[in-house]
Length: 101
Image (tube, rainbow, N blue to C red; front, side, top):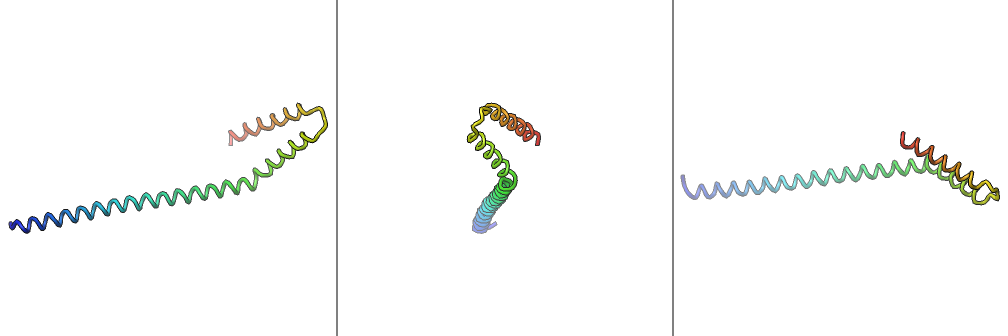
């Protein structure tokens, strides 16, 4: 076999190997990039769902709590301690029901 032919064949193998390895690296980076894009889209959708949930249900509960607290703060009744205990009981019930859900 001709020595020049072996050199040419070796050169072609080296170039093909480098091209293959470069292609694999590019493919891995592209796959990682696509996965990251999907992850970010999922996080955006989750944030939108959380925001929608907050505006629908949680806001009314928070508003109700603020009204109760305003009433307690502005009332001149001496039953403030009992009202605070009632609020604590409400929180305990909500904590137990929230843990079950």
